[in-house]
Length: 94
Image 1 (tube, rainbow, N blue to C red):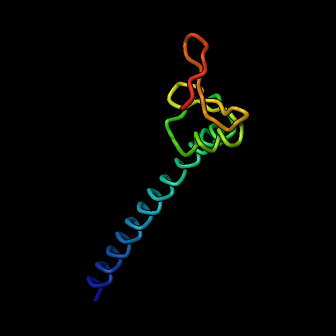
Image 2 (tube, one colour; image 1 turned 30 degrees about the horizontal axis):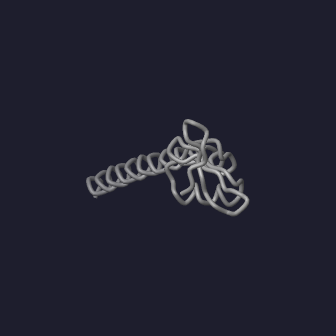
């Protein structure tokens, strides 16, 4: 009878230890995610930050009438045409 109680005690102890380790690992993973949110919000509200995201680029053109996409600044004219400036300063319409 005492052997069964000792074995049961060790099994419960093992399960408790295993469960507590598993809880600690899942809690650590959730703390990493919030660090990226401020950078994404900054990109939404600053058209001078270059982006590779086409959808974000289009939203910023609608909102600010200018946006940097892959290092090149695009503008929206008064006729709602999209253009960028060449190295010589000429407007190149898309």
